[in-house]
Length: 240
Image (cartoon, rainbow, N blue to C red):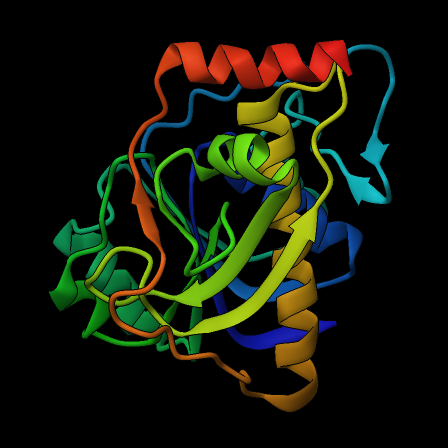
């Protein structure tokens, strides 16, 4: 399935690897890929999965031993590689403006917020947030929903300057990660990639999104989870 107006803006992260592998497995082809930052992904790197488990409840798990560049080459996607490592770098903005996409799949580096002037410069940025919005805004929400609801959630949204408050264009609940699967690099990336494919399939069929506008003042904002609470979540998985 061709995605003619879609550009994939990808940092060299586990999440980008998961997105690229899920799109390729689904037969989806963005018009262009813009890779940014330093490529330190080596072929054959540890996959952070015990044994040969490749899926959980039908959700494909990424092979982190396959670098992002390798997946893009296998898929035959056109690629522009930029060494600039911050999404707000003017060269990245200029590259996106030259490509004139209708939609940007965004997979950046942790801790970077897309500046308002970048969001206003062109196409909307599609972001997968690992939390059910608006209930779980902020950071490491996969663990907070795990502890509070015994499940995970992912929301697809179009970025706005306010954190996690853009229009919601897709949401889905997921089961807790099983023992033996790394949560931060593998499972979190996998469930985001799963919703990305589902959301883009709907988008490709209609050429637009059916969005949900978030109400101001609803939901909660969470901050990076304390190591003790994270350990409690992981320990509960082992006990189950």
